[in-house]
Image 1 (cartoon, rainbow, N blue to C red):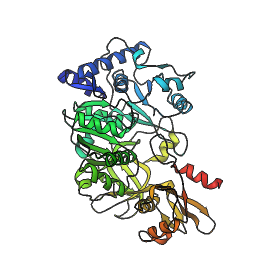
Image 2: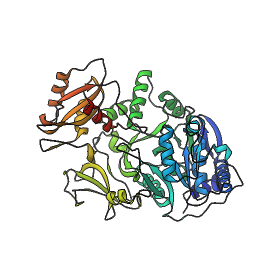
Image 3: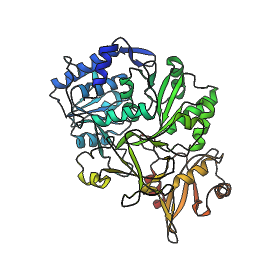
Image 4: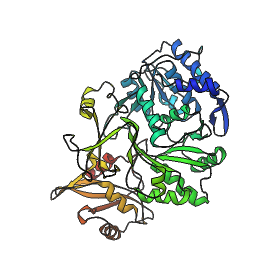
Length: 489
């Protein structure tokens, strides 16, 4: 089934229901949303774009983003959403690798692609006669998602119509209830998790609001929550922290927020506890990857509200089989740390035209995520770190996240990233890059703080004060940059 059938069904059954908003301004009901997407699909066909062709979307968040996504699917094309903050040369590489037939771009993004080999057009330029929904098989590609590329060139993850359906139904079964009375807000990049979550909200006929700023303005988000009520928001942990800090500073309680689903990076226990103190029981955690989008595990609203298992990422979502395995992929007992592996209809068929990377990542039907973790007897999964980030010091495995969690409970630490530094004596030693709350760091105080909470061998051997941590366009800390800095010192 073509995933855009869900939009068509809403237009047929609830056409006058409100659908698209820019800020508080309504721009389309469901009939209008579908009509615009179908006309967009007709415009693609008029340009010779058909089933299986790739249509890139390189735009800041805007209601037209959804029109471009669903219009591409109506035409049977494959959407290639590209993070709007990437450099033009990075985007050009993705367009070339995807062999995109067209790139939809506006404003600064369009200007960044001047001279690009791929044709570029704005959504307004793509209009034609309304196109009937093109039939697609469950195994046909719907979304080509390029990984953030923290260790090299990004890889194209092939996401099928079946995967998008499985992800959306797993959301309803394992993450949160959704109703037509709800609203969903696109503050996080629509090229990533926020855009993926549009599907379940189209399925259930909710309102779709894009902030006028197009991004993460905490005050604007809280204002829109109050305006719409019953607001759903997908947020990276850094967004949750910004919302919490803003609400504390301005005496706000998040009225109108119904659900904040957080994921896409490590949420430290201290940060989620602070957020709960301000906003109450609105939080749900998910863990996923582009290769298994948004739906590996979830930590329920009840668990988060009760501050139960906050150091975990929850239990396996519906439709996924979860394992922690050794280097050969054999299952490990509860409590043992190994590589997180998943299997099921949610897992990608492979990387786009990259057989070697596919063979390395998918073995015997299992996706080897590259993340390290352990399962407890109740099925709760605790993430440790990416396998490449584990520090081996004197033969001991040290997981940076555990050290980071300890340091973040110190009042002088705003942000921290822990990496390994080559050591003649130990092989590697632990060092920490710290964004301090004040102007200086007290290394001795941080040492004492760590020694009171973690084993001595895990304690950082050095602390480096930095103004900010290097992050990619998804807000994830790029530890390769920190390691490179160590090699230059």
